Image (cartoon, rainbow, N blue to C red; front, side, top):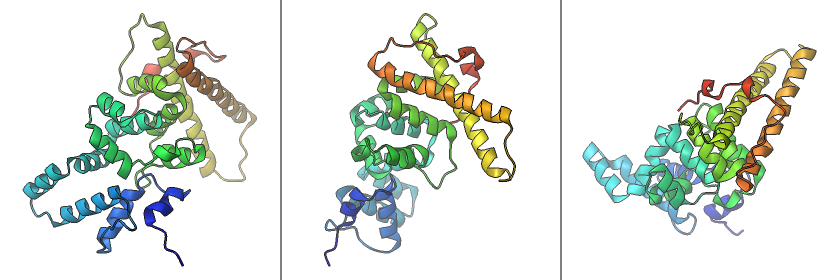
Length: 270
């Protein structure tokens, strides 16, 4: 029976994690095995060698020396471990289709570290058009060991759906940066983003409460109508984000009222 190289199997695995290479490298080190080119690709082999050397380090000085020898892996590992808005920005820019060079320039991170981060912790490049996979593996659960973060999930979703133009407005929003008051299009878009965050959170709260409630308990007609209204508003806003990428000036208001939610009252956790 022919043996298939692990990285070739993962290339076609529909349920692979976005950090499959890092997971593979960690398991090889735990099992005391070497990563070899016949079954693992170069990023996996480098990660396994790095982790094996890191396990041998006895002092901070030795760890610093290792980081100097493999600065891209050390930086990618640090970004992944720290999480927060920097990691979110890198993942969102990747989902928006920006190159590693553009992501690195805008995020203030070395391009080699961005490339390594995507290789080891956020491998989505070949599956950007696989919508179901992207939603499940890259938007909803890119870090299964961590508690889900609704704000970060919404940001990644808007980045993938809206592209770079929408992403810049979303990142300004989550970082608390306000557009100039005279830029009416940017102000209106910021309000729509704030409304989207608020409505998405509201719907998630309903969904969680529904799952936790007794199955025999039926929602009231008023609750159902309110949920349907939220879904309608969300459906109204999402196509707008896609249109911004194609026609930056096309920021017509939907049938909802922007004043329903004040964007500045929506807080995104880092």
